Length: 138
Image 1 (tube, one colour):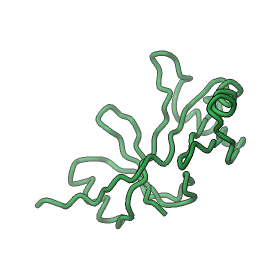
Image 2 (spheres, rainbow, N blue to C red):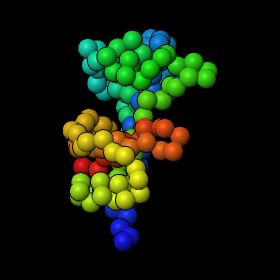
Image 3 (tube, rainbow, N blue to C red):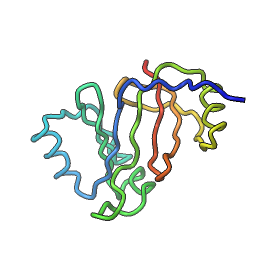
């Protein structure tokens, strides 16, 4: 039985970068690339910057969120926590069924904040272990 593909990518919603030096990262993205701060959640170690229609999330490695990503980024270490693809509206059961039919493990759907505001999304991993969030356009 073949299931039809319910995924239609529209854009990148956001990318999450891990850092051990928030001050330098903010200086680069704010001052050099002119990305204004949109939202700060210091209790989680999260700063979100507006990059056109997308967000760049910066997470400090010693924070609650940062510790989930492992060790601090190094030249040979992991720096990208995950990226989010904005996709066309979907039926949650159909999307999960499609992914499972292709042997792709999924997280639970959860309400998360992104460039277009809050919405339900799901996490999967690519073959190299990169985390990809799929979130519908609002």
